[in-house]
Amino acid sequence: MSTPLYRDPNASVEERVEDLLALMTLDEKLAQLSCLWSTAFVSTGSFDPNTVIEKMPHGIGQVTRIGASTGLHP
Picture 1 (cartoon, rainbow, N blue to C red):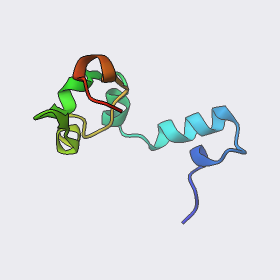
Picture 2: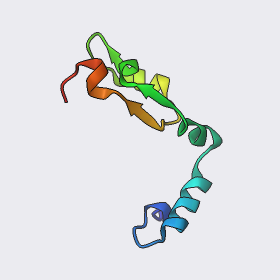
Picture 3: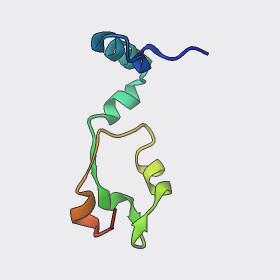
Picture 4: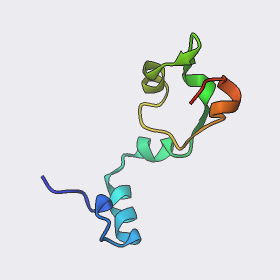
């Protein structure tokens, strides 16, 4: 199995971007436009990976306010 072009550091940025966009589904591209507060992933005072999978099955563009809104330590 060959490595996708977008992961090849020797390829140009343009080639890598074109390859990655060609491989992404429409749902994955749309997910890049979304942003969720980090509190959406906290359950009973701790980070909940199952909630992440449920809330962003196609990826996400940005998670914001990680330290300020949850009070969780890094």
